[in-house]
Amino acid sequence: QVQLVESGGGLAQPGGSLRLSCAASRSFFTFNIMRWYRQAPGKQRELVADITSGGNTNYADSVKGRFTISRANAKNTVLLQMNNLKPEDTAVYYCNADYVNLSYWGQGTQVTVSS
Image (cartoon, rainbow, N blue to C red):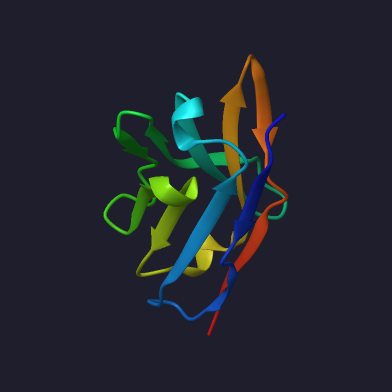
């Protein structure tokens, strides 16, 4: 069983920053990869960024150069630093990890970018 708990969402102005956290109930190294997804109203859930246990990262083209995924191993936490936010980044952001052939999701955290 795995629990993922996101935090850090909220309201930001265009050009602003937010940092999301995903706290896992198991060691980060339990998972081969951890991911951040987002889902905007009326749209499909999309992959934002992921990070492997070896530290390799991958980003959606829409967030490259603005978002950074990282981990805080001591806290079993994956972070998503979001800079230069745009209105189109508005969505519910979800943390995701696979463990023993099952996919686990957090409850999501709302990010709203608006002036």
